[in-house]
Picture 1 (cartoon, rainbow, N blue to C red):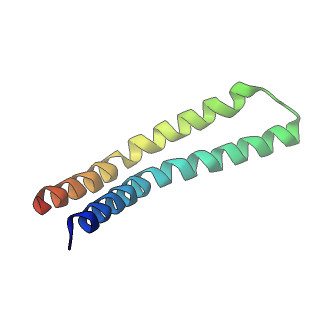
Picture 2 (cartoon, rainbow, N blue to C red):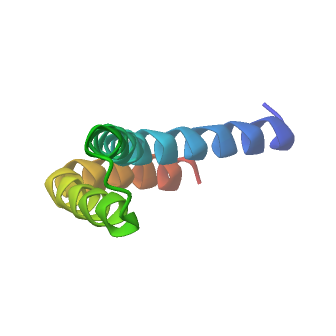
Length: 85
């Protein structure tokens, strides 16, 4: 495998790990935003802070819960990258 092909594989693997770690947080934030938007449209409350505060708090709580898994995933990827070099 040439240098260009191995560089592309490294970039692809890096992006996949980033996507795997970030996807649960982004998906959870999107679900919370959708639920808050639904509540806002039903109750006719259009306060901007009502959208951001629950979303931020929910993502922070989920990040704390998923932290051991994310660290394990990133450590495994880092170990794999060091073994390649």
